[in-house]
Length: 219
Ligand code: URA
Image (cartoon, rainbow, N blue to C red; front, side):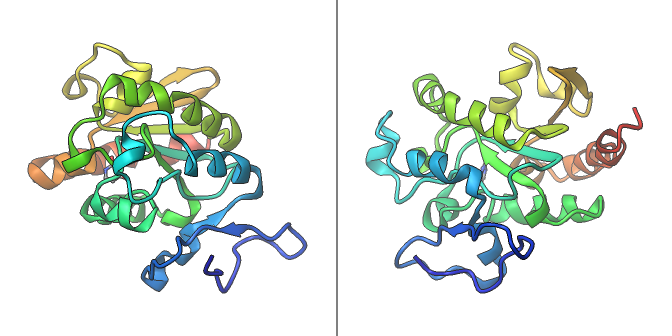
């Protein structure tokens, strides 16, 4: 394991495990994202060894999630792509760059939000995750939500949206926050959709703009 030079945790807090995979040299800017909050350690270990679906045979490495445990804001995407599979971190390719831009537009940095996906392993050739694969990962996602206990969950794309809004169309409900189990769920387009269709960039920016008010309980 490569060690992260500087922990983001306060002095006296238990040292976090870091999860830079052996043989991987990530850009320095990504190193803080490899910190594993102590309460997530066992879960991330389970995910790393998960044999539960066919994606275990083709993944380079699992991509459990990044960010602090106990965080007010959580993003749930679809599945790791090639770059994520190489580095073991979510949203570190082109979609991730746009996600970072969107976060900056509301004054947040990636290290201060929790980011994960519906499935933790890359589907071959970036195909859609299938129902068996999502079912195999469902308990991991539920446990992450319970540990992180976010006030606001933004779903990115239709697969994570379907967990709370089955049968709905993203074009109809994006940006409409709904309260479920004491937290806000905000369906959003996937950043990759905005990379394909530039007109969705402004739409996503507008949807992000309402997050700060939800986070401070002003609605
Ligand atoms: N797309 C996703 O849905 N998740 C990632 O981690 C990267 C791209």
